[in-house]
Length: 182
Image 1 (tube, rainbow, N blue to C red):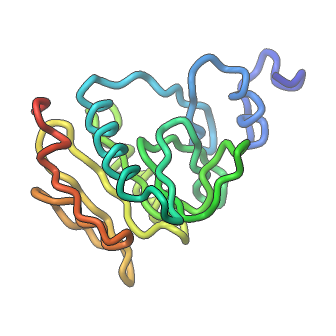
Image 2: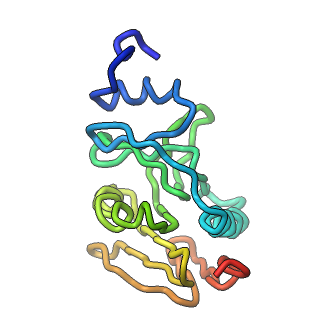
């Protein structure tokens, strides 16, 4: 941690990025203050893992990569830092990168503690990214995905049977993502 940060919280993105490297848990940056990322439920983790596995297998060998929660996404003209559950990019990722470049798809698994942000401020931040084609929110209580897809503008679509991902020419059934969990 830099000497400038000892005894006070970070006040800028640059300070936050320096500060976070020394923290034992991940934090998001909302442009004002760090927000600790708390652990999720088994159901939350399993839904995200199952979708990760499906996407990773389907995208293997192509130009796109799927990344789990350990890498940042810089939003809102790079003044905010988020850790989505999954991100797909079709831009090569340098091996020492800490942020995903040019996200094409961002996915969050909804939980009680994050629902407001996922459907509010994060929706606005993510859909402002020029590279983003689709923002998916998977519900943990019901086999339901909300897809915000960029055509001319972003439009909301409810998906109950299949995740339709035309950006990658993929259709992923929802039932296996929730099997034994809901």
